[in-house]
Every structure is written in structure tokens, then in C-alpha cells.
Length: 404
Image (cartoon, rainbow, N blue to C red; front, side, top):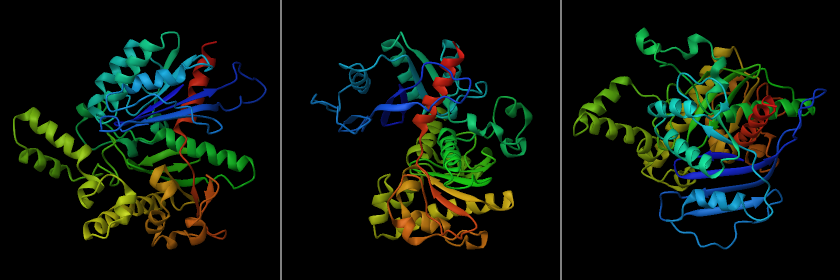
């Protein structure tokens, strides 16, 4: 089972995999058997969806309201009649802190490290830790594994990951970690598969724009991360749904000075502002939903779109310059995959870098993995669905086999 939790949702999937390693060839990818999602956690209405691989609704007729325990829903779904026994559980964890540098089985020592890393990802890690502890109680016979969003970015060179701050802080693990790594890894894996099938050449130099509620842009060479927009925490980089992206450090000091109350109250106030009240919601005055922003006709909504698309375009352009050119631009994440207008506005003005968008292909729906640039475009533009859960399942399977 794979658990991908957020601040207000829990996505979960059950995968089946071969039980033995194959020496003569790579083992087949884990195959999804069931998938579910609980959304609206903490809000007035809880929504629950659970389906098998064929799309058959298996959520049942149980009464669900805002007081329903989400973890009870997960347990009830995956332990229902006819469901397979869960051998292992893998969790997406955003920030491992400075000492955990690989995906690994969860122990008390690992949980202690994760608790110490909460300061790096206060929007994501606390809920993940709580969920892990509870699931370990409910599935004591299964092995539990943490897969980290930062591992993919460990190939960044020192000049990309180092902050220009005194050495004592760098020795504490203060550096640029990068995030959305499982998403980026799944994109690279999908493009490798497409290349193996003869659908495209694998792009040596690419930029991956993961655009959703959280957003990041990553430069990749030969399938490895060499730079990315997010840094020590998932708050920096390009503008996001409720997070501001990069800020002048002096602005953060200004916000702290303006905050009321004692030191702890001021820190909590500014932290809440930067994680929940900034970004697109602050600019547009609308809920954290790109569809609502696009439907709005206000000047604030228009400005929010301009700030967002300009920031992503600026990141892509700077990485194109850094890499000496691009072979592909990849869009993934909820906005990246489904919002053709955002893709058009982001790529506006990048013709000089060899990006020639196919307007019809960009607006059309079709295969999940699809090219939306002209065939003669020097830089290919692809829409590739993020498959974080599949990557977690693959890593868990590798760690399971490694124990046998």
C-alpha cells in the first residue's frame, strides 16, 4: 500500500508486484490494483472515493461526515472482504532533514529524525508523521517505508545546493534540498519508457515544471537533477497556490517586525502567512484553485496569473541558459497537466530558445503522455502525468527484495 498524504487529503493505492527478483531482466513495474482518496480533511465536508483498477466504485454506502476518522476509512477500505493482505506500506515524506539521504524502512530512529525535520516542512511533515505512527499501529504485521521527495535532487552539484551563509549553519544541514523529486523521477522514468518504445528520443537536457498547489521547476541532465527552484523548504521558488515562492530575506524580517505578540507568536504568525495566506490566494483574493482564478475577470486575478506564468517562464528560461539549451520542456502536476492556457502563457516568448507550441495539440485532450509542440520544434514540449505513487511502490518493492 502507498500513502500520499497532504494537509487536507490522503491518497492511497494498493499495488501488486512480483514476489521474486529476476536476475536476467528488470522486474515488471508494480501494477495498481486499487486506488482511493479522502479529501476535505479538516473542512466541513469529507469526500471519499475508492475504486479498483477497472474503475469500479468500491467506496460503499457508509455514512461519512466531517467527524469521520480518515484513517478509519483507509483501514476499512483496504481491509474489506476480498482485499489482499498488505505486506508493506510506503509513505511519501516531503522532507527527511539533514541526516536521511535515501528511501528506507521506518524505525523509531527514523521517526525521531523526521520529527526533528518538521521545522523544514511544517506544512507537510507533521501530518505525515502522525499518519505513519497510526498506520504502524493498525498494520503491525507489515513493513513500513519512507520515500523522500528530496532524494532525486541529491545529484545537484555543490554550487547549486549551497547557501552563502556562515559555515556553522551549513554544518547543521541548511542547504537547498529541492522537492517534488518523486514526481520528477516518475517523469524521467516515463520518458525512458517512451524512448524504449520508439515514441521519442530521451531528452538529454530537460526542464520539468511541476505545477499544482505546490510548484517547482527542475533542470535535468541525463536523467539527473542539476538544479531546482525550491530550496531548504517547499516554500521557496516560483509562486504557488498559498506559498509566495522566493522572497527578499529582508521582507521576511520586515514581516517578523510587523507581527504582533511575543517571539513565538510572531514566528507562528509569519509561518502561517507564508504557508497558507500568500501566493495566488493573496494576489487574487480567491480560493486556491487555478480554475477559479481563470474564470474571474478582476484585475487582481489577472495580475495573479501574470505573476505566476512569468515566474515559471523566468525559471525555464534561466535553466535553458544554464544548460546551454534545452531538448525538452515537461509539464506535470494538476495545473501542468490540465491547464493548456497556463502552458501557452508560460512558453510565451521562449521561441528564441527553440520552443514552438502546437496550439491545437496543447488544447486537445488525449493520451496522458503527449507531445504538445510542433514536430519540427527544436525543443519538444511534453505533458507527462506525475506518478509519485507508482515510484513509491517501485522503491518499496526494491527495498523489500533487498531484505530477502
